[in-house]
Image 1 (cartoon, helix red, strand yellow):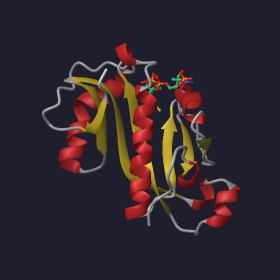
Image 2 (cartoon, rainbow, N blue to C red):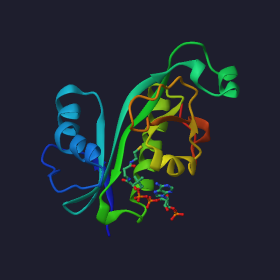
Image 3 (cartoon, rainbow, N blue to C red):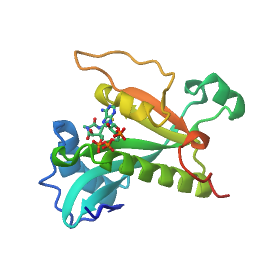
Length: 176
Ligand SMILES: CC(C)(COP(=O)(O)OP(=O)(O)OC[C@H]1O[C@@H](n2cnc3c(N)ncnc32)[C@H](O)[C@@H]1OP(=O)(O)O)[C@@H](O)C(=O)NCCC(=O)NCCS
């Protein structure tokens, strides 16, 4: 498999992608393109092998409140909204799960966070983790953010998680 991670382009055929999560699949088919090409609210990166899309990650610039980070981080950071990279969606095709594609997409978002830190400022990565995916993010050091969450209805609410820029695994700190 020759895996390449690159930004989504309008010509990409998104119709065959199936992660097993209908909300994520619908987002990818119907909204990822217009969000990126028309509304500029986020950018989707796809993991491709030739013409096949095996996974995607959607990221956006966002901010978090100081009060929501850990007490240790709170001491270090200023008391105004803090710039972060939001990992808005992440999914891998059912046929391609368990082959390292999800972690490759996550590592790609870490590169983007470091780039953002060096160019614009970014204190870390946030993700609203679905219950099933919590252990996946914990493996990389994400910790639950301290926000007030009200459980609505029967569906489990996602857990907001945060990984500080300095705690991102792998080489290199943001270039200044
Ligand atoms: C979660 C998801 C993105 C992982 O993608 P993947 O390509 O299957 O994951 P990888 O093959 O890169 O797995 C990397 C490691 O994490 C582990 N892992 C994968 N999914 C996991 C999960 N849900 N919980 C705990 N560990 C998990 C793998 O076992 C692997 O461990 P190893 O390196 O020791 O072998 C994928 O299962 C998916 O699309 N799930 C449905 C959508 C979803 O939940 N998205 C996240 C929304 S917040």
